[in-house]
Length: 226
Length: 233
Image (cartoon, rainbow over all chains, first blue to last red; front, side):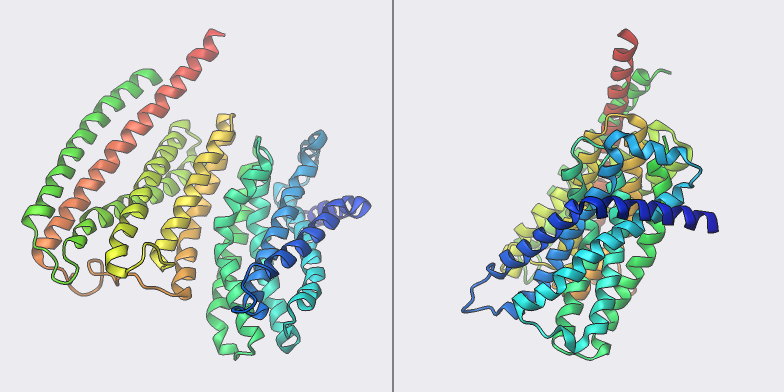
């Protein structure tokens, strides 16, 4: 267990270090997130629908798209020069590769979300400070769901000829529960509704996290098998 | 027996099963249209229920079979199991298409709208899209081992996803008729209608088996052809 965690840590640090050197994927992911937030602002009739009404949806669609970009990148960097074969040759167990990638993806997607959240407040003028702690919890729970399924599916998608196309096609159906839950919870939090109004959706995303983190970790081995 | 021989045999058998099932479908249509009473409030539109519900049953069964065969494939690593799982997924997509077309046709006169984001419609739509993704994924993978493993992963993940999607859209809101057959108390359907429905469910199950056999046989023959090509070169 200790060895797996240590190996996972090294893989995650390696991925973050590669990203840190160029920051290309991060910069483009961030610009993309800002673009989506801005474009969605105009996807309504301003005389009939206020920006606040579509704000939760806009936030989560942005997060979903940004996560998809980040997840695609995770294994693309391993495809060049067959870097993944190199990792597989090391004594690191397959579980370590999953958790390492999971950690790095979580950091990547989390960082984009952390920067787009203030921009979201700026653009949509929403009172996120009202229930900031709970909102962060919801974002964290849904992000774990996105990244767990995404890490597994991107490891598969990248081995196909149409990686950029296959990942969204396979991943989006799986993002429906956390995405819908995220939108519902955000809307309730922005309206300052009581905690009892949140319980159902929180339980749903929590159960999703447990089920899919477990399933993804177990099935990852199958994807790596040669 | 070679792949080609067993493929040809299953194809013949599947052809017979499918033909019997199609005759059954014709008989059920006849019974539903001519010998089953017209529903009091919905009128003739309710007749589509005898196709819609059995198709939903067959489609769901197809996806469950795909999920179970996926687990079995990862365990036994037999290529034929992978072919059977894929065959079931394709047949499931075909039945889902029937559900997704007959539903709106009924919905327009009864609900007054072609489409609504109701729990069961939405679940079916996402399940349909998920398995379309499954088939597309199989199409872009050339290595049979990788194709088998990757599609098994999607098959298993899909099976876990179904209850979550259903719960999600259910919590969002629902409009679909409440269960009238599969519920704790007695089915609230007149005996005539229930008999027709049950006959239709049976016929659609046989139709599913027939389609599955034909598609599986096609997969086997395709494999055999690929092997012959590989041997020849």
